[in-house]
Image (cartoon, one colour):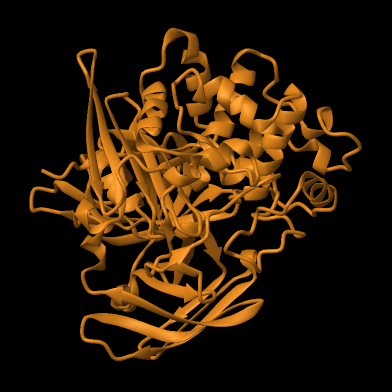
Length: 542
């Protein structure tokens, strides 16, 4: 009888030490809907084996953010950031750090350690800013955010004036002679040559999107710290207020610089938050369901247009483009005045939706949403806003800028003169079927009343305010989309905000979600005031 010999094979797997994790690691974090950002860890340790981690999110302008704690045990790295309310847990395997980043939701990520040649390319990382001169009356700021990955880059494009952020860039190449990129989502490309500059690194070239326009993109040596530099309210044409609520008491600090006191202003896209409020009322009182679709209100809409939900319109996830194809935008001094409901209806029935239905900021979508609510209630948008907001809140100087309406003519002398970015005067905007996208005219005092409602709603309005501020979609690790409002977080701070712009006006409104501080800024110059608004909201000038 043969004897069976059993051999036990023991495989020794070496446990990773802190030195095995040391270095600069980068990975691509997929946020969904075709949007990705770079997440990075700079990992080091001391002689006692204590691990230190700095967190980078270069596409969002965050660098060297210290983690609250980090530890290595049994080949597992764990990182905790109390301020970001985020955690990472991952294992080292074949020189890859694979794990899960959790910040609200859990997202898988694989990070690679940067080699020396990758680290040399870090000098190209940052935000490159420039301005497209569309025509004599219109300028459009653009920002290209470049982040380094192992053996490559990940880039995103921002158009702040259009409230479009994180537009994917398919290809980007940059070196000491040229910069090129393509963004197929918007049919755009750029090619530029490095130019000499003492204070910044600039690429001069052409931006192509249908036609070609000159564009110079520059990154300053101090760019990474520029977001923390304070701006002075007195440098802006602005009427504003800082609102605080403490111990049951309101305090409003008003300030006015270079504009008529108590003037009326076009608030632009801040109008969208009011249209969203109307929808939230209907959802809260169950007049409309969360999944109500356009086909339930509009007649004979083709699929998939009829399947668009009202909530997706309010969160910019409907698949509708930014503007309807039959809107004539050649007259940028008053582009919406002669666009009527029959044209909006035709555009809706003949539009091809984007696929997949990712985030796409859409004036078209909000115009459709407003007209849907009008049809559902059999009342004008002016009447709906007056009944729900303007009259209850005593917003007696707020109205829709509808051309040739008597109440508009009655207020015209109080409306401030608008100015382009360069300071030249420009025409007021008027609306018809696109009113839901940006037609409200208001004053700082009226907007203070509106923000107070959002900060500390009375019992009768709590359900509506909670509904409108409920995060619905994640745009990044720090930004969620509610109905109309953007919800943003930075460490322990969470706030809601929106801005707006017309040909001659800009606006910003925001408030912390603890209900203790709010800001209203209205300007009669097309110079964005968002940075100033968020500075006053989060880091008040002393």
